[in-house]
Length: 393
Image (cartoon, rainbow, N blue to C red; front, side):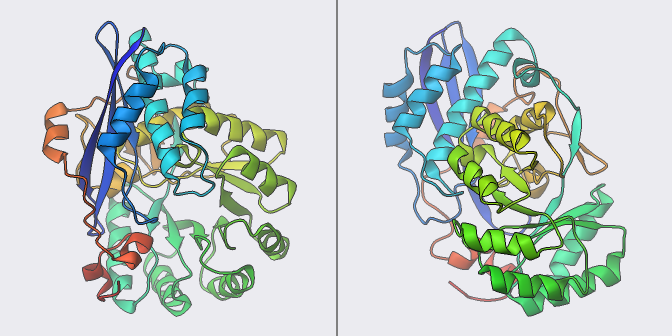
């Protein structure tokens, strides 16, 4: 079953937080009229450059057309040589590899008439717990909208959030106090996420202040990227487990070997697809470490890939972050993934288990320009200037 053509379709989808995010839908056609779908998720973040999709589409066709779509290993090896590891969690090459990886897995499972998790070895669970993101606050004006967002998600069955912190500790404290007063114990906090903004000492000091107002399951990214010594020192002093994104397999080994983390945050958009994620999960299992599945807030296609990863993962100790389909106001699939009681359900249809609506895909198709301009705060905080109530750039 030879690969015949790869097409990249850029789409722009609005978030409930007031920003538009750009994604690339991958269509992979193979001999026998078989098609697999993938996603390069959430390109509207730093670093501030966009892909030349016409050039990328041509390069992928030159590289992959004629290869056997049934043997993902050789395709993966070729893709890793052509789109090498960049070493950070917003790797564009990781997204390129993710898109092809998902499309190949979708095509194979669809052709076999089975859900993808069967192709990956069989599901160990049919759902897993997820949390809803509350993006970091820089001003008091952002607190009330975030509380309302939590209330709305609670009405939709979600009882767990993840809070981005560190941009303005005083506003974080005001939010946590208001959150506790309004919701009490009815909504839990999975994690506070520093996103590598602060050094370990400032993160530790902030954590001690936050702890006077709230509790959580774990702490994420409380030191600058690749500050292994600082991360290990924070972990030694922390009362909570510590998590960090795995940027590549060697990075995961360094995090574990250096005593930096208790939990590996594993994401297809960083590692470049499902196969490298399974290797990272096996690394955690060997080290008796924990795993959670992270996100860049994918659309339904990308999130569907995550559901099958979560279904087969031998280690999955903490709630996942994958609520993108609930964060966006539109999508390109006929029926979205289902959430029940704060859990993401694993679909049982063939392939990824979601069907692309090509009419919607064409309607959502967009040009290659970013709508962010130079709003660097928006790209970091994932909120619009109007919601933040400022004009920072």
